[in-house]
Length: 400
Image (cartoon, rainbow, N blue to C red):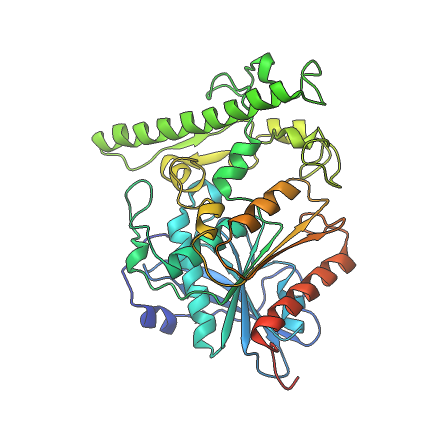
């Protein structure tokens, strides 16, 4: 949906919520749960979609919101089960069609419209649940809601979050969440790319798929590899900044580009690095090398403005750890030990970064990233989240 529009006040945005009716969602709602499709309007006038799940009996007093900056979380597996436990569960989609043009600061405004919607339903507590790439977004949002600092995007565009209406969450849950989109993409970047315009040319000395280098990978190779990953991110960031200046001088706003080979973390093949229960060589399928070379994958397509906001290590406002340090609400970090792309060290780093005195880290033995083919473990995990929330805010739906 469009990221532009006439400015609206928060009260106007709430009044303009549209009930879409019907059902265009893939998974049916569980028995005893109603589902409503919504179109929400953000403070800057942009429209985006959401799906509200709630129990058919009783009146929830607590709401849960899930959102990712660029993925469809209206279909999230947690919405129906959490609603069945008594919560009003809202899955929010950002205004962007995909990650190629996503701007994290605008996604914060979209998330705010979802939190505001739940508040205006009369819910006493709202819990932010950041799953996967939603973790960095939730941390960014809550930090800005508590102590706003960001006055523009990294490219100098609106919004000014210090002047935005960002109702804070009452607690935060990070579920199989990475350390922010700049961190995860950098950790996955293939540093053996020789030319950003050529998907094939490779520096053999930095090629993790060359058996001469491993696995297992030596400490010396791993150190060189990770330094080169950071260097590649910074080269792309410097290029995007310089390119925007050149484009502006010519009267252009932005430029799309391709980032080749973005699925190449050493941990994919070497299970001795940050050991866990994950399968070897797996990322969205059994061949990491295939996905690294594929025409479409994480961060493959971007614009200069989106890169600076989403993925630039030195430019993005959305790194999870510095934002988590700024929050004060109770925080639960959960991490599956069989997650294919997020590892125990990531979860510990997130938990260590949290500024709240009320924080907890729990590992989920055998848990995969989205609990694929693990329905019992998925349900157990959601019940543990509900129990943790209940300890802090009470029953989700008194009288049920």
